[in-house]
Image (cartoon, one colour):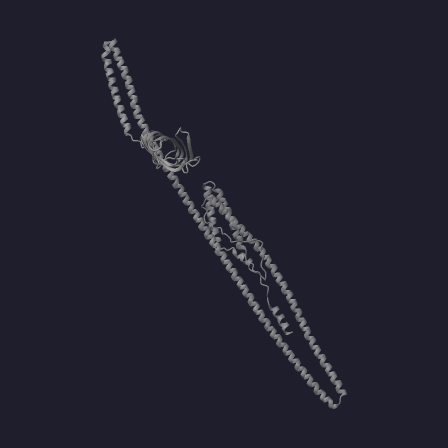
Length: 579
């Protein structure tokens, strides 16, 4: 009974209902209002700066003033403190949040002197931040209501436990009273028995029975005292065990709470660290992107500058060549026109002198003098024409950048197929359609080239062959890519025809109206059913009216009905007309 009384007293003395941890939301409400005003200001500045002017400058000044004030007000502001309150357990329960809050990206815009797109993005970030903080405020208000409910439930549990403890104490008091009543009734009954026995027994037995009764009563009292002492000892032992168990349970509960707090602090620290790292990464990324934009703008400016410089050089070069050509043409044309007029004048004057001598000797002398003067003028005009040609020839026009528009050549030479030697003639023609040449390098464009060759052997087995090669190539500067096609007719009767089509590659080392050095290689597998591998190489060197060609390649040769691999090479020299 003593143990139950101690338990009831211990429970009644405890205060298990912790007061709610309700944090003031005033700073959060103020931050939300500041973000919304800042977002509106960013939007106003973006709208005003759609066109540059005084309104834009005024809007940016107002934006910068408000932004500075907002940054100062929100320095040290931590919206996570309200979130941490809601994550901590309260009175044995955890708040069931209706929203999910990830790592918050704090709007870190530090300037209003940016372009319209950046101002619009800053307004969006401020609006998103205000929306997130407003959601956090609403969630915290729900949390405040939930803590009041939890507190009420706790108080109701405590009241129920107090009622149970009071009932247990009343029952304990009732049992103690009943035990005392039973002890008094038993003592009265024993006394009555002893009195009845004393009345019936003899005097000698009365003393003995009284002594025995007294001894029995003493034994009962002793046993009762021992039992009561044992009960008290058991109750105290149980109370000590209960207190020790409660102490250990409290220590374990405190340790668990401490572990949970440490875990929560670690998670919050990790979240802050992650948020800081993400912010630093974002800033680094934005810095890198800004540097890339600056570099791209710089590269674009340099590219435009190079293009402008290239255009200037090409324009100056083309203008210089055109002026030089016009000057040469003008010098010669003016001299030729003067000579023509002088000749016409001379003819007229001489005819007039002849007519005067025949008709009027009086004026013949003057007419003859005029004819002589006209003749001297004609001779002077002829000298000036010669001088004009000399001056025109002295003007050197550097048009080596202009690629050859075409040429026509006739060549003769010798070729060999394995050990057979042949003599032949070769005709070649090409046409080029070129763009404007850069200031340094060759022009790009399209070229069509055809050569045909007739050759007959002078050693070995008598034979003759007519072959031709047509190439169509587009030159990217000095390198040309395209297609090639070949036809070959063989003696006797030129009835055996071979052909092939394939890719063509060429490299132009020099290509202008005066000089042409070009190497080409052609692979002709399509349509070729005789040659296992058919390559044709062609090397051309031309200067002014002279031209030199070397061509060769691989083929298959039939010897006694057996097809064998062979090679072919030839050299040709001739003249050409180029333009």
